[in-house]
Amino acid sequence: MSTQSGELVIISGDRIKFVPKFIKSLQVRIATLLILFVVLSCFFLRVGILKSYEQRSVAVRTAEIQNQCTILGNQLVSSNYLENTDSAVINAELSQLSNLYNGRVVVIDDEFRILKDTYNLQEGKTIVAEDVVKCYRGEQTVNYDEENRYIEIGTPIFDSDGKRVLGMMLISVSTQSILNNVAFLETNADIWSFCICLVTALAAVLVGILLVRPLKRMSHSIEEMTKFEGNYLHENAYNETSQISDAFNRLWERFKLLDESREEFVANVSHELKTPLTSMKVLCDSLLVQPDVPVEIYQEFMGDLSEEIERENKIINDLLALVKLDKTGGNLNIQSQDINALVERILKRLRPLAQKSNIELIFESYRSVIAEVDEVKLALVVTNLVENAIKYNKENGWVQVSLNADHKYFYLKVTDSGIGIPQEETEHIFERFYRVDKSHSREIGGTGLGLSIVRNAVIMHRGAIKVHSELGEGTTFNVRIPLNYIAK
Ligand code: ADP
Image (cartoon, rainbow, N blue to C red; front, side, top):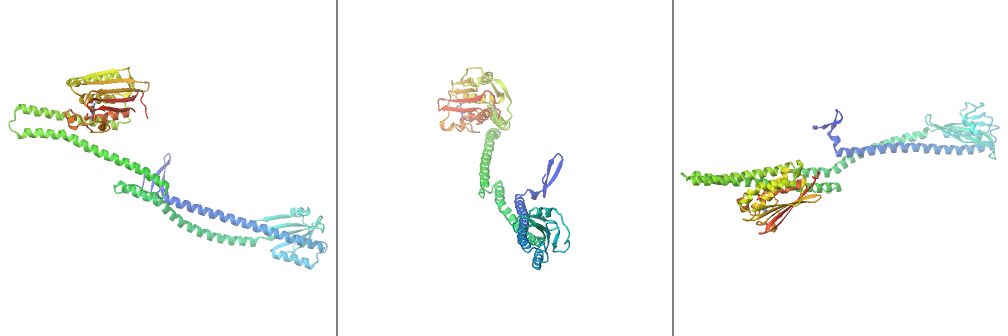
């Protein structure tokens, strides 16, 4: 169900969800996707860049301090500081290093005794920590404590040959300055991200409007076309819209053709139905205006009236048959039928009509044919073809109906010795209300609908019909219908 602001959608079972209308808007979806994409990109970029900046800064600082430690370690050895810690120069350098990095420098001898602590907290004490032991083994250690924001570096102090470990140096430096930089960059990144998101939001709305505009134009043009104000759809902004436009134009063309043929059909029907009525009116009026009309004239006029009523009746019956064929296109009552028997029954019924003009009706059956057909509709085919062959024949002529079959189809051929159809007219005779010689056809009670009915019924059986005619010589209709009904 659709409401002004959205629609109710059943998602599963009885659960009903309200979907606001704007969510289904392509424009909103494009804009949201763009904004989401940029916001997520900004977020990941911000996190990624800041993290790698922090790691890089810590690595650079660590390398820097390790360098300083190595240089200082060499000085400690050369000035024999591990034996005597009184050297003012070295102590000053140790203090300087401590101040420079806002940290603590601890010098330990090879017996794990703290010789110097720039914080003056543990001098003279023994220290046996994991890092110290590693340094004693000649390894350098680095620990970055992210939580407490400091780097702890342990460096062994080698003798002048670089072989024996004489002592260790432990340095803990604060990473606060690095983190201050990170915080500064973070603020900057936030401001820039906000600006980028704002610009993106504006751009997204604009892009959404621009991208959807051709679709809106299409919908407007279609709206115009439904009011018969626009002609065709020409939206070539995208390949896809061109394709939709072409497909829609083809559909529109078909619709117009259908509409035209419907209008033509209604006009033809009205005209055909009016003609007998006009004749009836003329007959009645001419009787009414004359006083004392002799009985013979009455009888003659009544006979004419009866003929016109008969004609009106035939047109209505044919129209009903045609409409029924159109409507029940998919509803064939298919059953296995003996086609020979069916044709014989119809010929028997039409024999009196043929005898009136002394026309010989011949049935030539090559084999017995059993086929899956709709009996009523196939009877319409045979009746109309044989009736036409009799109606458009000459006095003392003949009509030959032949029935044959192969493994796939059965073939019905109706040949007559009649008046024939001009070559250029044969392609039109299956059209509704089409008659070659209108007055002659009317005279013999034609409605112009018979062959339309025939063609529709044949097509419904997935068959084909062809006509061959020689003017003045005669006409042959060839019908081919599958023995087994082919359901689509
Ligand atoms: P109608 O009711 O006028 O016979 P049909 O649709 O059956 O209408 O036939 C259309 C026209 O085709 C007829 O008016 C006639 O001119 C021509 N026609 C049909 N069958 C024959 C035939 N066997 N011989 C000559 N003309 C024919």
